[in-house]
Image (cartoon, rainbow, N blue to C red; front, side):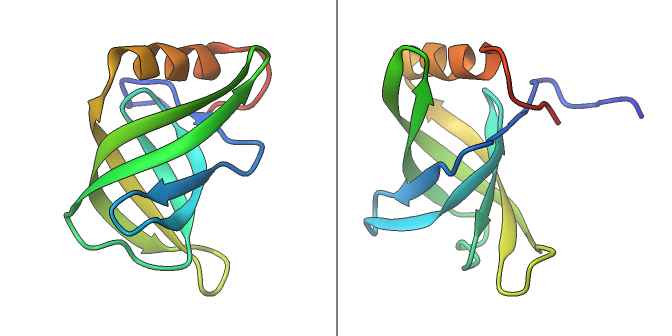
Length: 114
């Protein structure tokens, strides 16, 4: 199969919770992530076509880094597990330093790419 995505996506092997900063609640956890967006696994459907301010923490060999992003909700679908949904987000606001940290996390050895 030919991959059509522009950015390489890395599966999150650990649980990486994503916080909705507007409501100060856990929105879900990262399924996979790229420099331009992510698949979120959650128990509630995000507001359709909405903009979000999100934060998550990446753990790497040099410690942890909190990443804050502005994200646009693109789609939601039922997951294979009852009561869970998959949601796609496109990053629309990612600071330069956070972008470098995210790229380094994606490029670090180990993990699976999808």
